[in-house]
Length: 587
Image 1 (cartoon, rainbow, N blue to C red):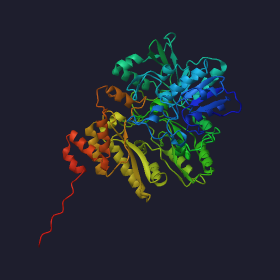
Image 2 (cartoon, one colour; image 1 turned 60 degrees about the vertical axis):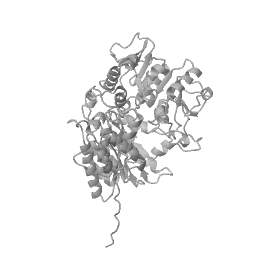
Image 3 (cartoon, one colour; image 1 turned 120 degrees about the vertical axis):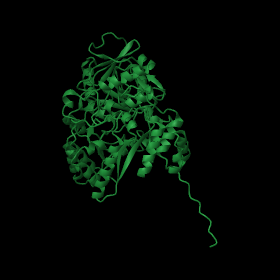
Image 4 (cartoon, rainbow, N blue to C red; image 1 turned 30 degrees about the horizontal axis):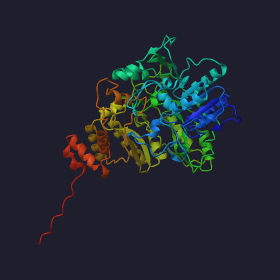
Protein backbone atom coordinates (compact mmCIF):
# COMPACT_ATOMS: atom_id res chain seq x y z
CA UNK A 1 0.00 0.00 0.00
CA UNK A 2 1.26 3.47 -0.89
CA UNK A 3 -0.12 6.56 0.78
CA UNK A 4 0.03 9.92 -0.93
CA UNK A 5 -0.48 11.58 2.44
CA UNK A 6 1.28 10.89 5.73
CA UNK A 7 -0.64 9.23 8.52
CA UNK A 8 -2.84 6.19 8.93
CA UNK A 9 -6.18 7.85 8.17
CA UNK A 10 -7.35 8.57 4.64
CA UNK A 11 -10.44 9.91 2.93
CA UNK A 12 -10.34 7.45 0.04
CA UNK A 13 -8.82 4.03 -0.55
CA UNK A 14 -7.99 3.59 -4.24
CA UNK A 15 -7.62 -0.05 -5.36
CA UNK A 16 -5.99 -0.69 -8.74
CA UNK A 17 -5.08 -3.76 -10.77
CA UNK A 18 -1.97 -2.02 -12.12
CA UNK A 19 1.36 -1.50 -10.45
CA UNK A 20 1.52 1.88 -8.74
CA UNK A 21 3.23 4.40 -11.03
CA UNK A 22 2.82 8.10 -10.23
CA UNK A 23 2.69 9.17 -13.87
CA UNK A 24 -0.04 10.98 -15.89
CA UNK A 25 -0.32 8.03 -18.30
CA UNK A 26 -1.64 5.82 -15.47
CA UNK A 27 -5.31 6.36 -14.67
CA UNK A 28 -5.01 5.55 -10.96
CA UNK A 29 -2.34 8.24 -10.57
CA UNK A 30 -4.54 10.81 -12.33
CA UNK A 31 -7.47 10.05 -9.99
CA UNK A 32 -5.25 10.11 -6.90
CA UNK A 33 -3.65 13.41 -7.86
CA UNK A 34 -7.04 14.92 -8.73
CA UNK A 35 -8.40 14.05 -5.29
CA UNK A 36 -5.23 15.24 -3.58
CA UNK A 37 -5.50 18.59 -5.37
CA UNK A 38 -9.01 18.92 -3.90
CA UNK A 39 -7.58 18.48 -0.40
CA UNK A 40 -8.52 14.83 0.11
CA UNK A 41 -6.08 12.20 1.36
CA UNK A 42 -5.73 9.02 -0.67
CA UNK A 43 -4.26 5.62 0.16
CA UNK A 44 -3.46 3.41 -2.83
CA UNK A 45 -3.65 -0.38 -2.77
CA UNK A 46 -2.08 -1.75 -5.96
CA UNK A 47 -2.42 -5.31 -7.22
CA UNK A 48 -3.71 -6.78 -3.95
CA UNK A 49 -3.88 -10.53 -3.45
CA UNK A 50 -7.43 -11.74 -4.01
CA UNK A 51 -7.48 -15.31 -2.64
CA UNK A 52 -8.20 -13.76 0.76
CA UNK A 53 -8.68 -10.32 2.31
CA UNK A 54 -5.28 -9.91 4.00
CA UNK A 55 -4.13 -6.96 1.84
CA UNK A 56 -7.47 -5.18 2.29
CA UNK A 57 -7.39 -5.91 6.04
CA UNK A 58 -4.04 -4.12 6.28
CA UNK A 59 -5.55 -0.88 4.92
CA UNK A 60 -7.08 1.84 7.07
CA UNK A 61 -10.85 2.19 6.80
CA UNK A 62 -11.28 5.25 4.57
CA UNK A 63 -13.51 8.05 5.78
CA UNK A 64 -15.53 8.50 2.59
CA UNK A 65 -15.31 5.63 0.07
CA UNK A 66 -13.40 2.83 -1.60
CA UNK A 67 -12.58 3.45 -5.26
CA UNK A 68 -11.86 0.46 -7.51
CA UNK A 69 -10.33 0.19 -10.99
CA UNK A 70 -9.17 -2.86 -12.89
CA UNK A 71 -6.34 -0.73 -14.34
CA UNK A 72 -5.45 0.97 -17.60
CA UNK A 73 -6.71 -2.02 -19.59
CA UNK A 74 -9.71 -4.29 -19.33
CA UNK A 75 -8.36 -7.14 -17.20
CA UNK A 76 -9.53 -9.82 -19.64
CA UNK A 77 -7.75 -8.09 -22.53
CA UNK A 78 -4.67 -7.75 -20.34
CA UNK A 79 -4.73 -11.49 -19.61
CA UNK A 80 -5.78 -13.16 -22.87
CA UNK A 81 -4.94 -13.02 -26.57
CA UNK A 82 -7.72 -13.04 -29.16
CA UNK A 83 -7.17 -16.81 -29.33
CA UNK A 84 -8.07 -16.85 -25.59
CA UNK A 85 -4.59 -17.99 -24.63
CA UNK A 86 -2.86 -16.54 -21.57
CA UNK A 87 -0.51 -13.71 -22.42
CA UNK A 88 3.13 -14.16 -21.54
CA UNK A 89 3.56 -10.63 -20.15
CA UNK A 90 1.56 -8.04 -18.24
CA UNK A 91 2.99 -4.64 -19.15
CA UNK A 92 1.43 -2.99 -16.10
CA UNK A 93 3.20 -5.26 -13.59
CA UNK A 94 6.83 -5.00 -12.42
CA UNK A 95 9.00 -7.19 -14.61
CA UNK A 96 6.03 -7.89 -16.89
CA UNK A 97 5.05 -10.78 -14.63
CA UNK A 98 1.58 -12.23 -15.22
CA UNK A 99 -0.93 -13.37 -12.62
CA UNK A 100 -0.77 -10.34 -10.33
CA UNK A 101 -4.41 -9.41 -10.92
CA UNK A 102 -7.52 -11.58 -11.23
CA UNK A 103 -9.75 -12.06 -14.24
CA UNK A 104 -12.58 -9.49 -14.10
CA UNK A 105 -10.50 -7.52 -11.63
CA UNK A 106 -12.98 -4.71 -10.98
CA UNK A 107 -15.68 -7.15 -9.84
CA UNK A 108 -13.30 -9.24 -7.72
CA UNK A 109 -11.80 -6.22 -5.95
CA UNK A 110 -15.30 -4.80 -5.39
CA UNK A 111 -16.42 -7.97 -3.63
CA UNK A 112 -13.36 -7.91 -1.36
CA UNK A 113 -13.87 -4.24 -0.54
CA UNK A 114 -17.52 -4.88 0.39
CA UNK A 115 -16.47 -7.69 2.68
CA UNK A 116 -13.78 -5.73 4.52
CA UNK A 117 -15.46 -2.32 4.56
CA UNK A 118 -19.21 -2.93 4.94
CA UNK A 119 -21.37 0.16 4.73
CA UNK A 120 -18.80 2.26 2.85
CA UNK A 121 -19.68 3.67 -0.59
CA UNK A 122 -18.05 1.75 -3.45
CA UNK A 123 -17.06 3.75 -6.55
CA UNK A 124 -16.00 1.99 -9.78
CA UNK A 125 -13.91 3.58 -12.53
CA UNK A 126 -11.33 2.95 -15.21
CA UNK A 127 -11.58 1.49 -18.71
CA UNK A 128 -13.03 -1.84 -17.58
CA UNK A 129 -15.92 -0.10 -15.83
CA UNK A 130 -16.38 2.49 -18.57
CA UNK A 131 -16.80 0.01 -21.42
CA UNK A 132 -18.94 -2.37 -19.35
CA UNK A 133 -21.35 0.21 -17.98
CA UNK A 134 -24.30 -1.24 -19.94
CA UNK A 135 -25.29 -4.81 -20.69
CA UNK A 136 -22.52 -5.93 -23.04
CA UNK A 137 -21.28 -8.84 -25.11
CA UNK A 138 -18.39 -10.59 -23.37
CA UNK A 139 -16.09 -12.40 -25.78
CA UNK A 140 -14.54 -14.69 -23.16
CA UNK A 141 -17.85 -16.13 -21.94
CA UNK A 142 -19.49 -15.70 -25.38
CA UNK A 143 -22.62 -14.15 -23.96
CA UNK A 144 -24.25 -10.94 -22.77
CA UNK A 145 -23.22 -9.88 -19.28
CA UNK A 146 -24.94 -7.28 -17.09
CA UNK A 147 -23.64 -3.81 -16.45
CA UNK A 148 -20.67 -3.88 -14.10
CA UNK A 149 -22.61 -1.44 -11.96
CA UNK A 150 -25.40 -3.98 -11.50
CA UNK A 151 -23.04 -6.95 -11.19
CA UNK A 152 -21.07 -5.41 -8.32
CA UNK A 153 -23.83 -3.37 -6.68
CA UNK A 154 -21.47 -0.37 -6.69
CA UNK A 155 -22.86 2.89 -5.38
CA UNK A 156 -21.53 4.71 -8.44
CA UNK A 157 -19.72 3.92 -11.68
CA UNK A 158 -17.58 6.67 -13.22
CA UNK A 159 -17.03 6.35 -16.98
CA UNK A 160 -14.89 8.19 -19.50
CA UNK A 161 -12.12 10.56 -18.49
CA UNK A 162 -13.30 10.92 -14.93
CA UNK A 163 -11.73 14.02 -13.36
CA UNK A 164 -14.93 16.09 -13.30
CA UNK A 165 -17.05 13.21 -12.02
CA UNK A 166 -14.46 12.21 -9.41
CA UNK A 167 -14.24 15.76 -8.03
CA UNK A 168 -18.01 16.15 -7.82
CA UNK A 169 -18.40 12.70 -6.25
CA UNK A 170 -15.80 13.46 -3.59
CA UNK A 171 -17.38 16.80 -2.73
CA UNK A 172 -20.84 15.27 -2.38
CA UNK A 173 -19.60 12.42 -0.22
CA UNK A 174 -17.77 14.91 1.97
CA UNK A 175 -20.99 16.93 2.38
CA UNK A 176 -23.10 13.84 2.96
CA UNK A 177 -25.14 14.38 -0.22
CA UNK A 178 -26.58 11.89 -2.71
CA UNK A 179 -24.82 10.84 -5.90
CA UNK A 180 -27.69 11.18 -8.37
CA UNK A 181 -27.32 13.20 -11.55
CA UNK A 182 -23.52 13.50 -11.79
CA UNK A 183 -22.45 13.80 -15.42
CA UNK A 184 -20.21 10.94 -16.52
CA UNK A 185 -21.61 8.40 -14.04
CA UNK A 186 -23.97 5.42 -13.81
CA UNK A 187 -26.10 4.25 -10.89
CA UNK A 188 -27.78 0.90 -10.37
CA UNK A 189 -31.24 0.94 -8.79
CA UNK A 190 -32.56 -2.30 -7.30
CA UNK A 191 -36.11 -1.24 -8.15
CA UNK A 192 -37.55 0.83 -10.97
CA UNK A 193 -39.21 3.28 -8.64
CA UNK A 194 -38.30 6.97 -8.92
CA UNK A 195 -36.28 6.67 -12.11
CA UNK A 196 -35.58 9.95 -13.97
CA UNK A 197 -38.72 10.94 -15.85
CA UNK A 198 -36.90 12.49 -18.78
CA UNK A 199 -34.67 9.46 -19.36
CA UNK A 200 -34.68 7.44 -22.57
CA UNK A 201 -35.31 3.74 -22.09
CA UNK A 202 -32.77 1.36 -23.60
CA UNK A 203 -33.59 -2.30 -24.42
CA UNK A 204 -33.18 -4.31 -21.23
CA UNK A 205 -30.45 -6.76 -20.28
CA UNK A 206 -32.89 -9.62 -20.84
CA UNK A 207 -33.98 -8.29 -24.25
CA UNK A 208 -30.35 -7.82 -25.37
CA UNK A 209 -29.49 -11.37 -24.31
CA UNK A 210 -32.51 -12.86 -26.09
CA UNK A 211 -32.68 -10.80 -29.30
CA UNK A 212 -29.60 -9.69 -31.23
CA UNK A 213 -31.52 -6.95 -33.01
CA UNK A 214 -32.42 -5.52 -29.61
CA UNK A 215 -28.74 -5.67 -28.68
CA UNK A 216 -27.91 -3.71 -31.84
CA UNK A 217 -30.64 -1.18 -31.06
CA UNK A 218 -29.23 -0.72 -27.55
CA UNK A 219 -25.64 -0.27 -28.77
CA UNK A 220 -26.59 2.34 -31.36
CA UNK A 221 -28.66 4.27 -28.81
CA UNK A 222 -25.81 4.24 -26.29
CA UNK A 223 -23.39 5.60 -28.88
CA UNK A 224 -25.86 8.23 -30.08
CA UNK A 225 -26.36 9.60 -26.56
CA UNK A 226 -22.67 9.58 -25.65
CA UNK A 227 -22.40 13.33 -26.10
CA UNK A 228 -21.77 15.99 -23.41
CA UNK A 229 -23.88 18.61 -25.21
CA UNK A 230 -26.98 16.84 -26.54
CA UNK A 231 -26.75 13.48 -24.76
CA UNK A 232 -29.73 12.29 -22.71
CA UNK A 233 -29.96 10.13 -19.60
CA UNK A 234 -30.42 6.44 -20.45
CA UNK A 235 -32.17 3.81 -18.38
CA UNK A 236 -31.53 0.12 -19.05
CA UNK A 237 -33.70 -2.34 -17.07
CA UNK A 238 -31.84 -5.21 -15.42
CA UNK A 239 -34.35 -7.64 -13.93
CA UNK A 240 -36.41 -5.83 -11.31
CA UNK A 241 -33.88 -3.00 -11.21
CA UNK A 242 -32.30 -0.65 -13.70
CA UNK A 243 -29.03 1.04 -14.62
CA UNK A 244 -29.28 4.81 -14.89
CA UNK A 245 -26.55 6.35 -17.07
CA UNK A 246 -26.27 10.13 -17.01
CA UNK A 247 -24.82 12.04 -20.01
CA UNK A 248 -21.03 12.31 -20.32
CA UNK A 249 -19.13 14.98 -18.46
CA UNK A 250 -17.92 17.90 -20.53
CA UNK A 251 -14.26 17.65 -21.63
CA UNK A 252 -11.76 19.59 -19.59
CA UNK A 253 -10.92 23.04 -20.92
CA UNK A 254 -7.38 23.85 -21.96
CA UNK A 255 -6.82 25.67 -18.67
CA UNK A 256 -8.09 22.65 -16.73
CA UNK A 257 -5.92 20.28 -18.76
CA UNK A 258 -2.91 22.48 -18.04
CA UNK A 259 -3.67 22.56 -14.32
CA UNK A 260 -4.01 18.76 -14.22
CA UNK A 261 -0.73 18.33 -16.11
CA UNK A 262 0.98 20.44 -13.46
CA UNK A 263 0.11 18.09 -10.58
CA UNK A 264 3.30 17.08 -8.73
CA UNK A 265 3.69 13.64 -10.31
CA UNK A 266 6.94 11.95 -9.41
CA UNK A 267 6.72 10.10 -12.77
CA UNK A 268 8.21 7.09 -10.97
CA UNK A 269 6.97 3.65 -9.86
CA UNK A 270 6.76 2.56 -6.24
CA UNK A 271 10.38 2.56 -4.99
CA UNK A 272 9.76 -0.86 -3.45
CA UNK A 273 9.66 -2.45 -6.91
CA UNK A 274 12.86 -4.22 -7.85
CA UNK A 275 12.00 -4.55 -11.55
CA UNK A 276 10.83 -1.93 -14.07
CA UNK A 277 7.18 -1.60 -15.10
CA UNK A 278 7.22 -2.13 -18.91
CA UNK A 279 4.27 0.22 -19.54
CA UNK A 280 6.20 3.08 -17.97
CA UNK A 281 9.23 2.45 -20.16
CA UNK A 282 6.99 2.92 -23.20
CA UNK A 283 5.84 6.40 -22.15
CA UNK A 284 8.59 7.66 -19.88
CA UNK A 285 9.89 10.26 -22.34
CA UNK A 286 6.60 10.89 -24.13
CA UNK A 287 4.06 13.69 -23.80
CA UNK A 288 0.28 13.45 -24.21
CA UNK A 289 -1.05 16.72 -25.62
CA UNK A 290 -4.67 15.82 -26.45
CA UNK A 291 -7.70 13.67 -25.65
CA UNK A 292 -10.66 12.49 -27.63
CA UNK A 293 -11.00 11.46 -31.27
CA UNK A 294 -13.55 12.32 -33.96
CA UNK A 295 -12.21 9.57 -36.23
CA UNK A 296 -14.91 7.12 -35.05
CA UNK A 297 -13.24 3.85 -36.06
CA UNK A 298 -15.81 1.24 -35.08
CA UNK A 299 -13.29 -1.24 -33.66
CA UNK A 300 -11.85 1.38 -31.29
CA UNK A 301 -13.21 2.09 -27.81
CA UNK A 302 -12.15 5.76 -27.81
CA UNK A 303 -15.47 7.10 -29.08
CA UNK A 304 -17.29 5.35 -26.23
CA UNK A 305 -14.72 6.24 -23.57
CA UNK A 306 -13.00 9.56 -24.27
CA UNK A 307 -15.63 10.68 -26.77
CA UNK A 308 -15.58 12.56 -30.08
CA UNK A 309 -14.69 15.95 -28.57
CA UNK A 310 -11.01 16.87 -28.63
CA UNK A 311 -9.44 18.72 -25.72
CA UNK A 312 -5.85 19.88 -25.93
CA UNK A 313 -3.22 21.29 -23.61
CA UNK A 314 -1.64 24.66 -24.32
CA UNK A 315 1.75 24.90 -25.97
CA UNK A 316 3.20 26.34 -22.77
CA UNK A 317 2.01 23.35 -20.74
CA UNK A 318 3.46 20.83 -23.19
CA UNK A 319 6.75 22.69 -23.39
CA UNK A 320 7.05 22.82 -19.59
CA UNK A 321 6.72 19.05 -19.49
CA UNK A 322 9.30 18.58 -22.23
CA UNK A 323 11.70 20.91 -20.42
CA UNK A 324 11.22 18.86 -17.24
CA UNK A 325 11.99 15.67 -19.17
CA UNK A 326 15.28 17.12 -20.42
CA UNK A 327 16.40 17.48 -16.80
CA UNK A 328 15.89 13.80 -16.00
CA UNK A 329 19.23 11.95 -15.61
CA UNK A 330 18.39 9.22 -18.15
CA UNK A 331 17.15 11.58 -20.87
CA UNK A 332 19.20 11.14 -24.05
CA UNK A 333 17.75 14.00 -26.07
CA UNK A 334 14.83 12.15 -27.67
CA UNK A 335 11.14 12.79 -27.02
CA UNK A 336 9.71 9.43 -28.01
CA UNK A 337 6.22 10.69 -28.77
CA UNK A 338 4.23 13.90 -28.85
CA UNK A 339 0.88 12.29 -29.20
CA UNK A 340 -2.41 11.12 -27.83
CA UNK A 341 -5.30 9.06 -29.18
CA UNK A 342 -4.65 10.66 -32.58
CA UNK A 343 -1.50 12.77 -32.62
CA UNK A 344 -2.61 15.35 -35.21
CA UNK A 345 -5.92 16.29 -33.53
CA UNK A 346 -5.68 19.60 -31.66
CA UNK A 347 -9.24 20.93 -31.90
CA UNK A 348 -12.83 19.80 -32.39
CA UNK A 349 -13.95 18.63 -35.80
CA UNK A 350 -15.87 21.84 -36.47
CA UNK A 351 -16.86 25.11 -34.81
CA UNK A 352 -20.45 23.98 -34.31
CA UNK A 353 -19.59 20.90 -32.28
CA UNK A 354 -19.25 22.81 -29.00
CA UNK A 355 -22.74 24.34 -29.47
CA UNK A 356 -24.80 21.42 -30.76
CA UNK A 357 -22.67 18.38 -30.03
CA UNK A 358 -21.24 15.86 -32.46
CA UNK A 359 -23.50 14.86 -35.34
CA UNK A 360 -25.74 11.98 -34.33
CA UNK A 361 -26.03 10.30 -37.71
CA UNK A 362 -22.65 10.64 -39.38
CA UNK A 363 -18.90 10.50 -38.91
CA UNK A 364 -16.70 13.55 -39.45
CA UNK A 365 -14.21 11.80 -41.77
CA UNK A 366 -15.95 8.84 -43.39
CA UNK A 367 -17.22 7.75 -45.81
CA UNK A 368 -16.31 11.25 -47.03
CA UNK A 369 -14.95 14.18 -45.01
CA UNK A 370 -17.64 16.57 -43.81
CA UNK A 371 -17.54 19.90 -45.69
CA UNK A 372 -17.58 21.72 -42.34
CA UNK A 373 -14.52 19.90 -41.03
CA UNK A 374 -11.75 22.21 -39.83
CA UNK A 375 -8.64 20.83 -41.50
CA UNK A 376 -5.88 23.27 -40.52
CA UNK A 377 -2.84 21.72 -38.86
CA UNK A 378 -1.28 25.10 -38.08
CA UNK A 379 -1.60 24.79 -34.31
CA UNK A 380 -0.21 21.25 -34.28
CA UNK A 381 2.66 22.26 -36.54
CA UNK A 382 3.49 25.25 -34.34
CA UNK A 383 3.61 22.94 -31.30
CA UNK A 384 5.99 20.55 -33.05
CA UNK A 385 8.29 23.39 -34.08
CA UNK A 386 8.47 24.70 -30.53
CA UNK A 387 9.03 21.21 -29.10
CA UNK A 388 12.04 20.43 -31.27
CA UNK A 389 13.53 23.84 -30.43
CA UNK A 390 13.62 23.15 -26.66
CA UNK A 391 17.26 23.15 -25.49
CA UNK A 392 18.43 19.61 -24.91
CA UNK A 393 15.98 18.06 -27.38
CA UNK A 394 17.68 16.38 -30.34
CA UNK A 395 14.53 14.92 -31.86
CA UNK A 396 10.82 14.96 -31.04
CA UNK A 397 9.14 11.99 -32.68
CA UNK A 398 5.53 11.01 -33.28
CA UNK A 399 5.12 7.31 -32.67
CA UNK A 400 1.51 7.07 -31.53
CA UNK A 401 0.39 7.44 -35.14
CA UNK A 402 -1.44 10.08 -37.18
CA UNK A 403 -4.79 10.10 -38.90
CA UNK A 404 -3.39 10.15 -42.42
CA UNK A 405 -6.64 11.01 -44.22
CA UNK A 406 -7.04 14.07 -42.00
CA UNK A 407 -3.41 15.08 -42.60
CA UNK A 408 -4.04 14.99 -46.37
CA UNK A 409 -6.94 17.44 -46.00
CA UNK A 410 -4.51 20.18 -44.94
CA UNK A 411 -3.89 21.67 -48.37
CA UNK A 412 -0.70 23.44 -47.33
CA UNK A 413 1.04 20.05 -46.81
CA UNK A 414 3.44 21.90 -44.47
CA UNK A 415 2.71 19.53 -41.59
CA UNK A 416 3.25 16.49 -43.80
CA UNK A 417 6.60 17.84 -45.01
CA UNK A 418 7.86 18.62 -41.52
CA UNK A 419 6.54 15.34 -40.17
CA UNK A 420 8.72 13.53 -42.71
CA UNK A 421 11.73 15.81 -42.21
CA UNK A 422 11.82 16.19 -38.43
CA UNK A 423 9.40 13.92 -36.56
CA UNK A 424 9.67 10.44 -38.08
CA UNK A 425 12.30 8.05 -36.75
CA UNK A 426 12.66 6.12 -39.99
CA UNK A 427 9.19 4.63 -39.67
CA UNK A 428 5.75 6.19 -39.31
CA UNK A 429 2.84 4.14 -37.96
CA UNK A 430 -0.43 4.51 -39.83
CA UNK A 431 -3.60 2.46 -39.78
CA UNK A 432 -5.17 1.64 -43.15
CA UNK A 433 -6.36 -1.68 -41.57
CA UNK A 434 -7.48 -3.23 -44.89
CA UNK A 435 -7.62 -2.52 -48.62
CA UNK A 436 -11.15 -3.66 -49.56
CA UNK A 437 -13.51 -0.70 -49.45
CA UNK A 438 -16.49 -2.76 -48.27
CA UNK A 439 -14.52 -3.94 -45.24
CA UNK A 440 -13.22 -0.42 -44.61
CA UNK A 441 -16.78 0.92 -44.58
CA UNK A 442 -17.64 -1.62 -41.89
CA UNK A 443 -14.61 -0.43 -39.93
CA UNK A 444 -15.45 3.25 -40.32
CA UNK A 445 -12.18 3.85 -42.19
CA UNK A 446 -11.46 5.79 -45.40
CA UNK A 447 -11.11 3.99 -48.72
CA UNK A 448 -7.85 2.38 -49.78
CA UNK A 449 -7.24 5.03 -52.45
CA UNK A 450 -6.79 7.59 -49.66
CA UNK A 451 -4.00 5.53 -48.12
CA UNK A 452 -2.30 5.17 -51.49
CA UNK A 453 -2.40 8.97 -51.94
CA UNK A 454 -0.90 9.43 -48.49
CA UNK A 455 1.83 6.84 -49.08
CA UNK A 456 2.81 8.64 -52.30
CA UNK A 457 2.79 12.08 -50.62
CA UNK A 458 4.78 10.85 -47.62
CA UNK A 459 7.33 9.19 -49.86
CA UNK A 460 7.77 12.40 -51.84
CA UNK A 461 8.12 14.45 -48.64
CA UNK A 462 10.76 12.07 -47.30
CA UNK A 463 12.68 12.13 -50.58
CA UNK A 464 12.61 15.94 -50.64
CA UNK A 465 14.10 15.88 -47.13
CA UNK A 466 16.79 13.48 -48.30
CA UNK A 467 15.54 10.69 -46.05
CA UNK A 468 14.63 7.09 -46.69
CA UNK A 469 11.55 6.45 -44.56
CA UNK A 470 8.93 3.77 -44.33
CA UNK A 471 5.28 3.51 -43.44
CA UNK A 472 4.35 0.80 -40.94
CA UNK A 473 0.72 -0.10 -41.68
CA UNK A 474 -1.50 -1.56 -39.00
CA UNK A 475 -3.72 -4.30 -40.46
CA UNK A 476 -6.71 -6.15 -39.02
CA UNK A 477 -7.78 -9.57 -40.21
CA UNK A 478 -11.21 -11.15 -39.71
CA UNK A 479 -13.00 -7.90 -38.93
CA UNK A 480 -16.80 -8.30 -39.20
CA UNK A 481 -17.69 -8.02 -42.87
CA UNK A 482 -14.29 -9.33 -44.06
CA UNK A 483 -14.52 -12.54 -46.06
CA UNK A 484 -11.82 -14.97 -47.13
CA UNK A 485 -12.06 -13.46 -50.63
CA UNK A 486 -11.38 -10.02 -49.12
CA UNK A 487 -8.28 -11.40 -47.42
CA UNK A 488 -7.08 -12.75 -50.78
CA UNK A 489 -7.46 -9.26 -52.27
CA UNK A 490 -5.51 -7.80 -49.34
CA UNK A 491 -2.73 -10.35 -49.90
CA UNK A 492 -2.55 -9.48 -53.60
CA UNK A 493 -2.37 -5.77 -52.77
CA UNK A 494 0.41 -6.30 -50.25
CA UNK A 495 2.34 -8.39 -52.77
CA UNK A 496 1.94 -5.74 -55.47
CA UNK A 497 3.24 -3.06 -53.09
CA UNK A 498 6.07 -5.23 -51.81
CA UNK A 499 4.84 -4.95 -48.23
CA UNK A 500 5.30 -7.87 -45.85
CA UNK A 501 3.80 -7.02 -42.45
CA UNK A 502 5.46 -8.81 -39.56
CA UNK A 503 2.39 -8.37 -37.36
CA UNK A 504 -1.31 -8.53 -38.16
CA UNK A 505 -3.96 -8.05 -35.49
CA UNK A 506 -6.74 -10.61 -35.59
CA UNK A 507 -9.93 -8.68 -34.78
CA UNK A 508 -10.42 -8.68 -31.00
CA UNK A 509 -14.06 -8.25 -29.83
CA UNK A 510 -13.35 -6.01 -26.84
CA UNK A 511 -16.25 -4.69 -24.73
CA UNK A 512 -18.18 -1.64 -25.83
CA UNK A 513 -17.22 -1.18 -29.49
CA UNK A 514 -19.57 -1.14 -32.47
CA UNK A 515 -17.39 -3.70 -34.24
CA UNK A 516 -17.90 -6.04 -31.29
CA UNK A 517 -21.64 -5.44 -31.67
CA UNK A 518 -21.35 -6.55 -35.31
CA UNK A 519 -19.27 -9.58 -34.30
CA UNK A 520 -21.91 -10.70 -31.81
CA UNK A 521 -25.06 -9.89 -33.76
CA UNK A 522 -23.86 -10.60 -37.30
CA UNK A 523 -25.58 -7.36 -38.32
CA UNK A 524 -24.09 -4.30 -40.00
CA UNK A 525 -24.46 -1.28 -37.71
CA UNK A 526 -24.99 0.96 -40.78
CA UNK A 527 -27.66 -1.02 -42.61
CA UNK A 528 -28.86 -3.45 -39.90
CA UNK A 529 -28.56 -6.19 -42.50
CA UNK A 530 -26.71 -9.49 -41.99
CA UNK A 531 -23.00 -9.55 -42.77
CA UNK A 532 -20.32 -12.22 -42.75
CA UNK A 533 -18.35 -12.70 -39.53
CA UNK A 534 -15.36 -15.04 -39.35
CA UNK A 535 -15.58 -16.86 -36.02
CA UNK A 536 -14.21 -20.35 -36.64
CA UNK A 537 -10.53 -20.54 -35.62
CA UNK A 538 -9.60 -22.08 -38.98
CA UNK A 539 -11.25 -19.30 -41.00
CA UNK A 540 -9.59 -16.62 -38.86
CA UNK A 541 -6.21 -18.32 -39.17
CA UNK A 542 -6.54 -18.39 -42.97
CA UNK A 543 -7.32 -14.68 -43.17
CA UNK A 544 -4.38 -13.81 -40.96
CA UNK A 545 -2.03 -16.11 -42.91
CA UNK A 546 -3.00 -14.51 -46.22
CA UNK A 547 -1.96 -11.10 -44.92
CA UNK A 548 1.39 -12.62 -43.95
CA UNK A 549 1.83 -14.91 -46.96
CA UNK A 550 5.57 -14.21 -47.13
CA UNK A 551 6.17 -16.05 -43.84
CA UNK A 552 7.21 -19.61 -44.83
CA UNK A 553 5.28 -21.04 -41.87
CA UNK A 554 2.05 -19.73 -43.36
CA UNK A 555 2.43 -21.37 -46.77
CA UNK A 556 0.21 -24.44 -46.06
CA UNK A 557 -2.55 -22.22 -44.65
CA UNK A 558 -2.33 -19.79 -47.56
CA UNK A 559 -2.60 -22.59 -50.10
CA UNK A 560 -5.58 -24.05 -48.21
CA UNK A 561 -7.19 -20.60 -48.11
CA UNK A 562 -6.72 -20.04 -51.84
CA UNK A 563 -8.27 -23.42 -52.58
CA UNK A 564 -11.22 -22.71 -50.28
CA UNK A 565 -11.76 -19.33 -51.92
CA UNK A 566 -11.68 -20.92 -55.38
CA UNK A 567 -8.49 -19.03 -56.28
CA UNK A 568 -6.11 -21.94 -56.86
CA UNK A 569 -4.84 -20.07 -59.91
CA UNK A 570 -3.07 -17.70 -57.53
CA UNK A 571 -0.96 -20.36 -55.79
CA UNK A 572 1.76 -19.91 -58.40
CA UNK A 573 1.54 -16.14 -58.05
CA UNK A 574 2.46 -16.31 -54.38
CA UNK A 575 4.70 -19.37 -54.57
CA UNK A 576 6.13 -19.69 -58.08
CA UNK A 577 7.87 -22.95 -58.85
CA UNK A 578 11.59 -22.84 -59.34
CA UNK A 579 12.68 -23.60 -62.87
CA UNK A 580 14.69 -26.78 -63.17
CA UNK A 581 18.07 -26.35 -64.75
CA UNK A 582 18.30 -28.17 -68.08
CA UNK A 583 21.04 -30.64 -68.86
CA UNK A 584 23.96 -29.38 -70.93
CA UNK A 585 24.23 -30.71 -74.47
CA UNK A 586 27.35 -32.33 -75.89
CA UNK A 587 27.84 -29.49 -78.34
